[in-house]
Structures are given as C-alpha cells and as structure tokens.
Image (cartoon, rainbow over all chains, first blue to last red; front, side, top):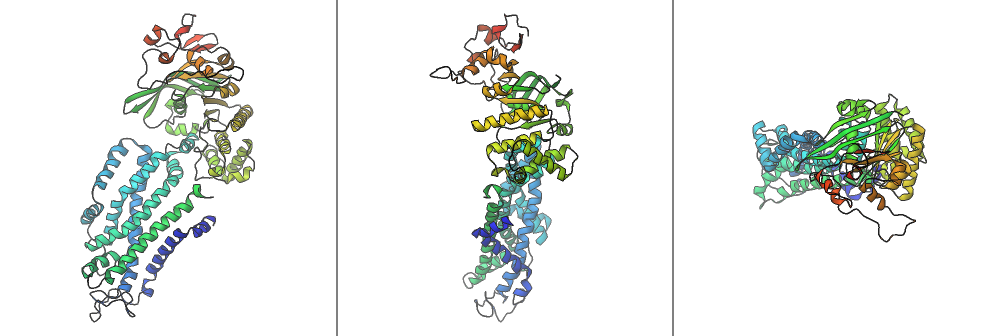
Length: 276
Length: 324
C-alpha cells in the first residue's frame, strides 16, 4: 500500500501508468468505443478530413481512421507484451546461467551467438526469422522476441557478473544457500531494475517492429488494423491527407512515451534503496 | 583441546591471462576447539584467499591443492552438495563490508532465517523465533522491529551485528571473520570485538580472525600466524609475538604501529610492496624488502623453521638450531 501511495505521488510515472491504462481500456472496449467497423469501406467518403462524423477523418478506402486507431490498440498492446515476454523468457534465464557459471559456454557459445545476432540490424534479423517461420502475427511476435532476446541476455549477464561478486552473494553462499536459490532469490531480484527498464524500452520498440513487419506483409495481415500498417499505408497520401499519418503516429508516440514513463516511475518506487 | 581445522600444504592457484598464478603457496596451520587464531598480513598476502579456500567459495578460475581437514574430513574432497551442508552449519563467515554483505532487497530477519531453514528442520515460526533470539543475542535493541527492516535502514555497526547473528544462527564450530571491524568506527570496532568475544565464550566456537590490525590481534587472539606473499612466515602464541617477534617482516609490522609512550616523529614503514604473485623472487619472498637480507636470502627460499615456541621462515635463525 505504501509503495502504491508513493507511486501516486510520482507525477511522471502516474502519467505513464494512465496512458498505458487508457491503452488497455481502449483495447478491451474497442467494439464499444469505435463508432464504425474498422474494416468497412465506404467509397462515397474517401479521404475526408477530420470532422463531426469521422473524428479523425477517413483513409483512401473510406475507412474511419478513429475506429481503426482504436482497434489498432489491440494489436499494439499484444505486440508489446508478447514480443517482450518471449524475449525475456529466452534472454533472462540464459543471461542468469551464463553470467553465474561463466566458463566456456558463457564465453564462447552464448556471448559469441549474442554478438552474431546483434551484428545484424534488428529488422533484418527479424525479417530473416519471419521468412523462415512464415508470415502471420504469431510468427512475427516470435521473430521479434528472438530478435530482442540478445539484449536481455547481455543486460542480465552483465548484472549477474557484477552481482555475483557482491559480498551479500558470497555471504549467502557462505551460509550454504544452493545455486538455484542464489540465482533466483538473491541475484535476479537485484538485477530486475535494468531488466525492467530494458523491457519497457523494448515494448516501445516492439510496437514499432510489429508495425514494420506488418508493413512488409510479414506481420498482421490486411485488413486487420495496426498502427504501423496504417502509418505505412498512409505515407503515400502524406501530401493530400496528412491527418491519415498523424493519428496513428501520435498513438504510437503516446504509447511509447507511456511505457517509458511507467518504467522510470516503477524503478523509482520499487527500489528499496530509494525508499525513504 | 581437539584440533577442529587442520590446513596442510594448502596451495591455491588462479588461472589468469598472465598464466597460472599461485596466491597461496604451501600454507600450514591448525585451529583448536574454542581457540581464536589470528591471521595477519598486509593486503594481497593471501589471507582472504585462504579463508575462501576453506569455505570452497573461490571464483571459478581458482583451485586448491593440499588438504583442509575439518573435523577429520578433507573439505577439498567433499562434493558441492556436501559442502553446502558444511557452510553456515559448521563453518560460517563474517565479511568485511557490513554495508554490502547483506542483500538490500530482503529484510534482515529473512536473511538470518535463511540459514536456519536450510540447516535445521524447523517451521517458519520457529525460524523466526530463532532469528529474533539471535538479534537479541547480538545486542540489537527492538529486535522484533529490526527483524522486519531492510539493511539500508541500519547503521554499519548494526549491520555487522546482523552479519554476526547470521553467522552464529546455526551454532557453527568455526567462524571465519574476514576483517570484521576494518570498515567500522573505532568505538563500534571495540563493541563488535567485545560481542564476538562474549559469544565465543558462551558457545565455545573457534574463530579464525583475519586482520591487518595488530591491535585487534592483541585483544582477541590466542595464537597468530603472520602471512607474507602467500606463505606463513611466523607462527606463535600472541604473547610471544608481541614480546619477541622473530621474522623481520613481523618486526617491521610491529614498528609501524604508533606507540603512545614512545615519541617518534615518523612511523617506520617497510619499503616496497608485496611482490606480484606471478613475479615471485627466487629466494626468500621478503628478501627484496628486508633490512637484514643476506646473500643466501636471494639464492634459496627458507623453510618454516621450528624454534622454541615459535615457527619462523627466515635464514637468520637457521644457525640457532632451527629445524625445518
């Protein structure tokens, strides 16, 4: 409770939380909020500017942009959570074990693989994995998750390397605590802050990565609305209908900002060293 | 008195980028039940590595040879699983830095309980009782409240008391205290030393006290070994050490302590520093810094000689009938 109240007093963190909460509410109640079917095409109302009936205007197929942005929240929130979830599930345990046990596996197998994966531009890597797995939302998530995982291996391992030499880890070992318990109860919680910051940042990139893959036809299949695919679809209309890129762009911006503010706020509140 | 720890020809090496480095080189000593053994030497002489070797807590690139017999069994031959039942239960450790030796994310009580739950078959409620009793035993005021507090809420001296409570919680037969008072204020140092002495008298546990502070040695120890560059250079009981130090290195250490009765403008220092582990001199390891070095010192390494009531690794005493 104390922590919660402290979080409420953390202005920016609260704003971040409100943005993410709004996103979740919008995603859940999309059918109630959206005034139109997001995929319904109306050729009598092509490229209408924002107005009373179509708040955000319509696109070149006469679809209501507001409704599409609202439904797009569903895809984006899934993209953020699933891709980062997969990345953490792969990256954090590998980083923990690799950093704790060191040796040949750590140095030559894990870290060199991480180097190899990070040597590719992220999108190229995700594209390559998608190409192998095939198109579709699930495979896109897996591809992005695998693509993000080296960052989690690296950051987790780095934390473990410094934490395993801390005296309190030595102290825990000196009273006979077993390795598994040392790793998960003593090291992991102390390593969590930078991992969570990485996760919020990665969620923001996950949204963008999903958008990019969707644009290239490897993610969400049309006509399902996702902010990225809307943005990319609308870019050819920039000169005649700038609002068509503005709204999905603003949505991405706000959500990415929200995740970042939330991450910072949580860090300030959850770290007992900063508790007063 | 029975001997509970017997270290013979302990050699601890580390694999490094500069090749294999020998940090502890043929160390022998023993600790009897209820005894406090001081291990003295300057930074880098292998004191801490010796203690980590006994606990088998060396980093992955380190390995030990020789034998470390604790209660008759060779610690170096135990499996990791068997070792985990020894750590905390039979041998426990107190660390130097009370500020960093407690996990910042767990409450003080949970950390003391952890050892109790690991080594004894007790319920959580009993473990909590034990933890609070231990906090009281180490002289903590408001033990019940402290039980639920985090380390950052406590002062350095209080944290060191918690560390002692943690180490003593399973009644170990041997406690290795690695510079337990170095990071504390002088007044707190005295309190912590008093506490350790009282607990030792109550429980009869043995203490291996690692320190570079000869004042602490004088106050706490029964017997002392002086280490230099990974070797024992002198071993004797505490009175003899202060009255009649033999090894030039020990004499140098004694002369570098300020003395209230003697007026001196400068404290004496020992010139130079401990040789690097991968650049050990061929002869006596102390010879390059020794004011009494003789030609033989640079040629041949001296053995640990058995003198009367004394062991000393120095050529000066070879003629006195000292036997290796």
